[in-house]
Image (cartoon, rainbow, N blue to C red; front, side, top):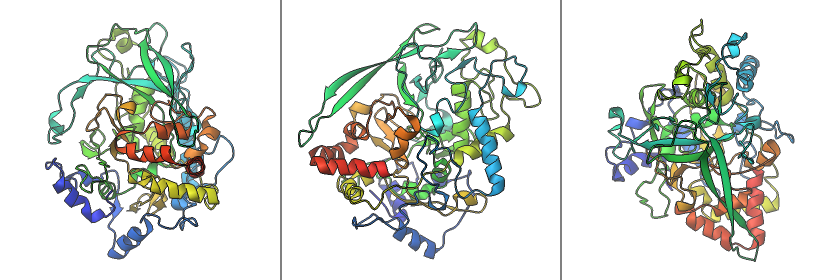
Length: 509
């Protein structure tokens, strides 16, 4: 793992992808207006973000994972739904307006309420909140006749690399499935066939842990049943996705790209077995290649583009960035293309830019709850185990955000997301075998861990990993493979009391 920002250029030169000038070309941040750091600030940041070495007491500011933006840790299911503590009174109103749009239940066109019509015609959910339940994780559908879900299947087929992306020598070409597009929608407007029904089945198996502690994992299999428009194309690649939590997104967006790239080690130059790689993606918002930060494979560069894409794909709502009124339906789905829609009035799209700005502001400013019991002896022992197992090689604890003149709510904060936002090979067990930009079918973005101990409290049916297969944090760890195989093996070999301490530490985050 590389922690010195000055190494970014050297690492880019060392990688076999010499065309990827990570130190310059892909550090552009048109979504931000950062102020340059002084030498004194860089020295302070290096000291503040250095790895922990003393596990007898919490580190300074460790109880504030979002810095000054941290919110109190509630004990109910609203723990992820608070606004960042750094918002002004006027910004609190903006946040509440965005919250209203995030929860808005969209309806089919035509409708008497023009501001709420345009749903679908194909869709996965009727609102953002119905996937990101209480702003937290989604649920895996438990029965074939489910009435709502917060999980879907992405789909694509192999395809060419677009001309604007060909300078990325290892970009993996793909294309939408010719009939079904880029994701499968399981609900539809009256008179229009839904695309499919998601079916999930599990095979359980035992894993042996040191100390005779029992552990049972479940291996999922997914079926796109009841396909409404014929069979999938030959070579179609499916990937299950559960909606992730929404907290802290604006702070992740404000981390300097150079600081993220400084942790990349594509050729594993230090020989630690960890080869974090940045995903490089085409930004529709800025018409350029940017560092991917959001999505389970870091396939989106900004919160705004991620939000607009979800409106189009998940709800079928057109936005200025994704203006198709039929949402994600393809030219092969004639009834969907010709169905009534909610665009064409003074807003032009079914949600206009001022309202998209409110949704983006809301999404950027959902607060990260404060740590709990960080000084508890078992939690401190668990933190020591976390470090000894090698987990911080990917789950990087700390960053300092840019100093931002136009976004003081995210400006110059010491944050503790426990993620490097890079891609890592997680092994065959977690592979979806579907690439996304530079991400291979075995690679996933390191999931941030902040707030993970409140998952059960917020979502009630807590599940973990990209597809919700893990029912506990221990199960999630035991699914780690690939670059994380050595760390997982160390956890397996721990005495039970140290494994319990590790889980206590994670639950305190």
